[in-house]
Every structure is written in structure tokens, then in C-alpha cells.
Image 1 (spheres, helix red, strand yellow):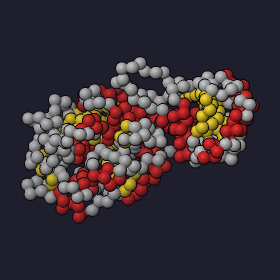
Image 2 (cartoon, helix red, strand yellow):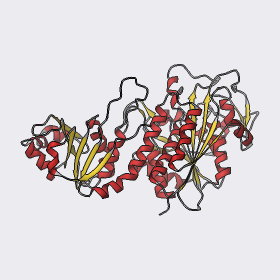
Image 3 (cartoon, helix red, strand yellow):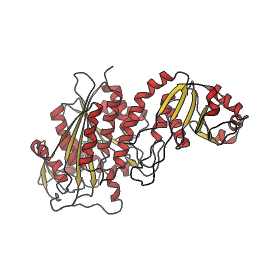
Image 4 (spheres, helix red, strand yellow):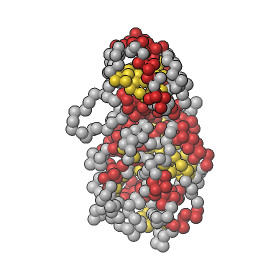
Amino acid sequence: MTTPIAISFTETDLDVLSAAQGKLALIVTPDNKLDPAARRVNRLTKGAVARLTESDRWADADEGECVTLAFPAGLAAEALIVVKLARRPDAATARKAGAALAKAKGEAALTLAAGALTRTAELALGLALRGYDFNDHKTAENKTVGDAVIMASKPDDVAAVAAPLLSVAEGVFLTRDLVNEPSNILTTEEFAARLAAMRDMGLEVDVLDEAELEALGMRALLAVGQGSDSPTKVVVMQWNGGGAEAPLALVGKGVVFDTGGISLKPASGMEDMTMDMGGAGVVAGVMHGLARRGAKANVVGLIGLVENMPDGRAQRPGDVVRTMKGDTVEVINTDAEGRLLLCDVMWYAQERFKPAAMVDLATLTGAVIIGLGHEKAGVFSNDDGFAGGFLKSAEAEGEGAWRMPLAPAYDKLLKSAVADMKNVGGRTAGSITAAQFLQRFVKDDCQWIHLDIAGVARVPEETDFAPKGATGWGVRALDRMIRDRFEAG
């Protein structure tokens, strides 16, 4: 697993600044006030810091941006990075500054003189999140990436605040690794094995095989994978950090590769379907983060693992399958397989764990990308309070999300002549009818959110906190929601 750079916190020592190796970073406020470290470096560089802060280049920089001076005279460092940041920034700006610092840092070691900055832990989170590079399958020798040392006025206090944030960052990295991994490596068996290894972190992990799934009646899930040589599995991860309360259930779609089945996708872009397990990747990342930070909450993560292939045994358009709940589904399009997986795993989650609430995540529809692009995930829910709480958490973490409608009027699009429902409702309102399908498998007493993350799980351009590719979207928002709503005080 790719791990974030090591970040340590230490007392401010002005005497070490001149000899710091790699890159040295300072913080200067937008009104050009220099703290003791900046004043010391300004003297060492014969006024270079002051000249920079008086320049148009500095004036044009936004708060949270960095300006780099290469090979500064008077310092051993190969570069001096000056961060434009108020002493009391908001969390979002501090994280943005940390991400900018990560890009400026590159592979070098970093020493940051943060002084009395009030959001140093948030800056460290941004630094960790943006310092990601997936290179497991590049044959060139991996380059060593230098660690970061952050000097602060109260390093022990900063470290205590930063520790749970950096634990969540590890979960984000796990999610990114899983989504970026090619499908010939991340098979259903390999995925299950990686999750089973999380027992070492204190998670209870069960792996259900096809015989057990057949006995449970998960025929809709099994139908998706019957054309693949890769066995279908369900992985159940339990974190019991709370009391006797009912758990939150997180359910993830884990289609390790999606050809579309008999309803074959176009060849162009099919290579991107390695990311169709994005929902499962987020669930894994959240569970990893909860275990690493010792969350005082009960959370169960359930992941359906399957591969959708066009084989002689594959399900066909027109087939009728019976779900674990007992409802029948006419399969109109075998490329609408995610909802067949989720409906069985969601029903199993409710039957076995009687959760207080349930969230499912899936790269479910292309329609949500048409509607929301790559900026926001689609949020569907049967409970306004639950949905509002999640949206608040997502906004606080800077992870875009937008509430989408559910209504009985959409159900008529799923009406089947030969079964209880169809698995698709046509092009009209495609992401809504998919959510409407899933809602039929949510019990009346269960608060539920469906997150369609097709547009945000992997993006074509870099973001503030991630390079091009997998983002890890949702790990931070769900972790914050768990802290705010489900964690014991």
C-alpha cells in the first residue's frame, strides 16, 4: 500500500534553519508580516524574503499559494518555499496551503517553520493528501521521497490533532491504490485477500464464498459474475469501537472489471472500467481509517466483489433473477449490474446487522456524470436529516456532493411485464431510476443514503488534493460524518 510521507512535529529551532537540507519552507501572512523564523531567514538570505514579499509576484499570489526561490544564498537548502497564509486561516485554506506545499516539495525532504500557525494539523493533512504517486507497476527504480519536519510552537498539541487526520489520509491512499490498480492484479480473490489482511488492524473480517452466497439466496449478485472465471465474493468488515448501539452499515460496489457483459460496452474507454470497484474502495478506506484512529463507533463495511464478463454462461438480456429479498428482476441490460450486486448485499446487511443507518457507494451510472460532471457525487436518501448531515460533512471536507430527488413517479419507468421490476428504466433520469431501484431494498425503519460516485472516484485532471486518477473521494466525508453522528463522546 502507498503510504503518506512521514510527517513529524518538533519545537521551533531557529539555529537549524541555515543548515536544513532539501527544501525549507516559511509562512508569511498576506499583509507581509514575518514571524521570527522568516526574519531569521531573511537575514541569512540578505533580504531575499522581504524583496519577494514586496514584489508583484507575491501580490498576485492567492492565500494558500507558494512561491519558490531556488538555491537561495545563505542557506544549505536547495530551495526556499514561501507560503502565503494568515496566522489564523480556516481549515480549507490551511489544507490548500499544505497541498501547494506538497507540489513544491516534490521528492525532496522538507523543513517547515510553522511557528504559531493555528491550523498546522490541517496544513499537514493537505501536505499528506497531495503527496501521492501510484507507481507500483513502473519498472524504473522508485525514487526515495523525503520526509517532512514541521517546527511548531506547541508540537505535541499539533501532533495530537494531526494524528487522526493523518490516519484518515492513510485510508484515502488505500482507496486510491485500489481504484488505480489494474484488474489483472486486483482480482476478486486478491481484493478479498487484501481486505482480510486488515484483521491485523483489529477489524473482524469475514469472506463469504459462492456456496455461502447461494445458500443465502444472493442470486442477483451471483448472476452478475456467472460469466467470469473470477469467483464472486462478499467481504464483511466489522469495527466495534462503540458500545451496544446498532452499527452504521457501509455497502460498496466492487465490480473489479466491467465489460458490460452481453450488453458489451464500446471498446473506447473500456480500460477505465478497472475503477468500477470505486465504491468498494471507499468502504475499505473508511474502515482502514476507523481502525487506525481507534474510532469510538460501531461500523460494518460490506463489499460485493464480482467481475462482469461476456461468457457462454453469462446472464442475458431478458433473464429474470430472484433477489435475496425475494423480488424478481427482469434484466434488460447486463451493463446495469451494479444495482443487482448492491440490492443483495444491502438486504443482507439489514438482515444480519439491523443497522441504525446504511450508506451504499457505487460508480453506478454514467448519467450522474452528465448531470454533475466530475465535481460532485449524487446523493439520494430516504431521510432529510441523514442526507443533510452527510452533505454538511462533505462540504466541511471539501468533497463535492449534491442532493438528487427520489419520488414514486419514477417507479413507473422500472415496471416490467414479466417480473416485479426491470433493472433499468431507460435513458431518462438514469441515475434517479437506479437509486429508485435500490430504495426497494431498504427497509422502512432504516435511514439510507445512496452515493453515486461515478464522476468523482477517478478524474481526468488533477485536483487540489490528488493527482490525475483516483481521488479517494468520500473517505474523509464519511469519516467526519461518523465522528459527528455515530461516535461515542
